[in-house]
Length: 447
Ligand SMILES: C[S@@+](CC[C@H](N)C(=O)[O-])C[C@H]1O[C@@H](n2cnc3c(N)ncnc32)[C@H](O)[C@@H]1O
Image (cartoon, rainbow, N blue to C red; front, top):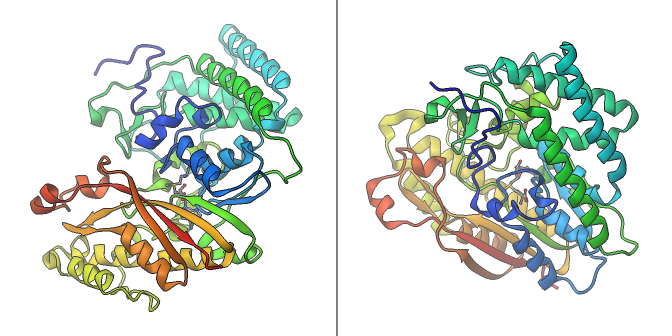
């Protein structure tokens, strides 16, 4: 296996492969950190413009990710509120929301100091004090030895910087999180896996500090832009709760939200927590698998890995649609010989997901003001060869929860596959006849 050239990063897989996020890659602030966004900055901006009149509204994203909705709401003068269980994503969204008060002069000084620190450590050969996170395990070394040495020096620098400027240290942490997979021996294919397994070269060396300085320079420029382009006014600063919306929505005042723009996890078993393991461990958000287990249980719909072993999971009694009941029954009948890998395991996963749709929509019912709107972006799914039109199911459950369903539109009639679709779980018949798409479900709180 040939070593990668110094400085060569495969740009196609150093971040999450999400077509909606690709559009965010060139937009100030949104481009800081890749994520499975569900939609682009332009979609969030249009939606907010269309459903609010003037600034000063409360805009909520219950599944905030890295804050696409929140930044767009904040920029035009609304109070942005987010819930997010993944501590790394919640951290990123919070740092981005603070872009308007980032002292970019101090950040630029820090970039110079980081560069000097890199040169100094190279000439003197000082050894880093930072230790790799003990609980982080990977099949093969996540960073090659030369890269690791530089990463540890960066983490030393961040700790030093944090003593004087915690906000600047957080921005450097964000930049490290955004770039770390690029110079690791792993990539997103679309799940995090070894580069060699995908026929790529390991990264034996990389100019980590130079790469970080370039990223930080971009962040400084964007923060200047954001401050200049952020609407004035008296609204409160945006906030991200590191909590499950499904469990904690009642912490919000009832009927206090004007607009929700959100994209919950799709029914595709995409493992946000597993795919951010490096970020969670290396940035100190998690110490052991126990921490990840908690996140798995909190995740919308949990995961197939969690639901598959349960006895038959029953649909919530709030779900009335016969089509939903029939679809779950059809999934359950597939491949009975395959144990938890067959229909029963996947039907349990689908049921857990649909039951969480009930909890989510009960939360929407709780927080939305009269006539307030929620725009929910969702992709359909196929489990064990059975098509699952999650958009129509979400709409049916919204109706069961007392919300008015205004419209289901399908702006993306085709989208690329996901872990389930690409696995053998999909039958030949459905591969030919069912297209993956993405819809926007518009629901309204009755007046
Ligand atoms: C499709 S992503 C949303 C991305 C977001 N639109 C953005 O711009 O980054 C779904 C997010 O929901 C989060 N999530 C999953 N279950 C949650 C829960 N119960 N409460 C809050 N967030 C949750 C995941 O961690 C993930 O970041």
